[in-house]
Image 1 (spheres, helix red, strand yellow):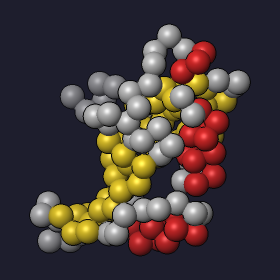
Image 2 (image 1 turned 90 degrees about the vertical axis):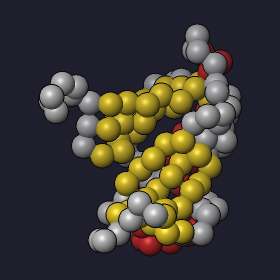
Image 3 (image 1 turned 180 degrees about the vertical axis):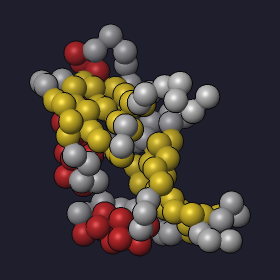
Amino acid sequence: MTDRFKSANTILYCRQWREAVVFYRDGLRMPVSFSNDWFVEFIVSGDSRLSVADEAQASIKTAAGNGITLSIESNNLDVEWDQFVKNGLSPSPIKNHPWNARVFYIHDPEGNRIEFWQSVAG
């Protein structure tokens, strides 16, 4: 059943909330769909969202990057990598993976790993 769920939003609870907002908004250039004084929701694509919440104002605490990888498929991995370098971020080198994809990683201010990947025609 492909239409079972309407949308998806991953919420990251952050100690360094302001830095995380700047990272996702300015560094990764994700558009903001909602914000208030402790919560910002970003548009990843279509109906996919990523939010950051200030743990000081939430009942849930940060995972501090432990056991979390956000995986985001890109339409043009090289353009994203170049833009992140220009934005002062430190993406890993682009690597080839055996599942017919190219991939690089970056970490947000909380230590969460973000994987950007693009399929390679096989």
